[in-house]
Amino acid sequence: MLKGLGGLGDMAKMMKTAQEMQAKMAALTEEMDRITVTGESGAGLVRAVCSAKGELKSLDIDPTIFQPSEKEVVEDLILAAIKDAQKRAQERMQQEQARMMQDLGLPADVKLPF
Image (cartoon, rainbow, N blue to C red; front, side, top):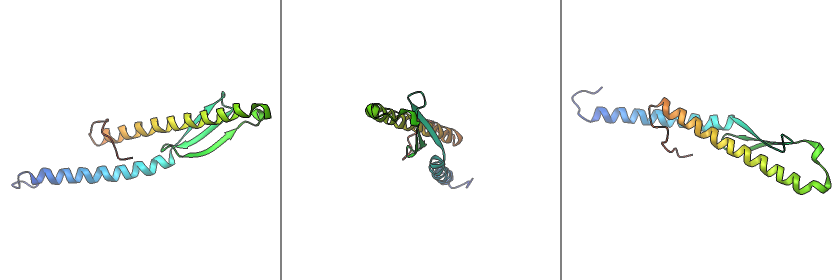
């Protein structure tokens, strides 16, 4: 590419790669808002849906667990489902980031700013 300019050709290539990476990171960030994961607890009695960024999108509670004497159990199940969904969201984001890094020819363990 730019022969005769020494290291400037490499610099131009690095800048192009950096711009590509920035564009892919922006696309990945948008995609993480659209990808959802579901966490559950109580054998599916409580389900929490999060974006891959970890934002809670919805909560589904089976009405059979609404017994006044079981209030603390229900609260624990809700928290467990949310935590499970957030854990799955984090795992999914890490998978997507590693895939993007691999597509760019970079090491999968490079840390991204999100």
